[in-house]
Length: 114
Image 1 (spheres, helix red, strand yellow):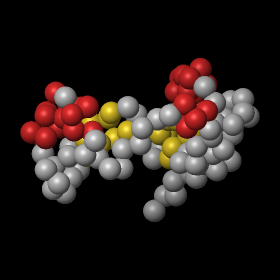
Image 2 (cartoon, rainbow, N blue to C red; image 1 turned 90 degrees about the vertical axis):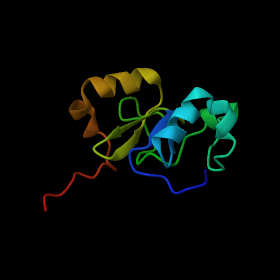
Image 3 (tube, rainbow, N blue to C red; image 1 turned 180 degrees about the horizontal axis):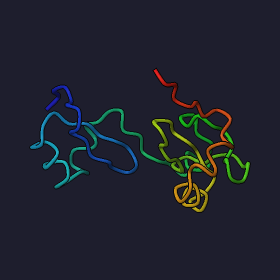
Image 4 (spheres, rainbow, N blue to C red; image 1 turned 120 degrees about the horizontal axis):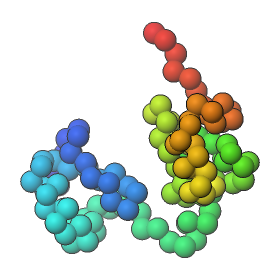
């Protein structure tokens, strides 16, 4: 509709979070996402080149498990911070025991107690 989005009215589509103004728009989108996604000018279509390049969005540049460069789309949000990984296997290992691996992410900022 072009209206402002409302918190909680979101859908994950191709690893990107898309916001909506109402539940009706969410339903319409979910019924035929390809019809509506072109209206989202911020939507980024993944290309082969993008997938093989390290990404800037995660807080880290190297995989905390292997030390290799991180790969686009291989991320996990942990305590409101995006952590990057080199492969799906490392994502799975991290998700299985994040406390074991998070200390290897030197860029990770522990939440301060206020």
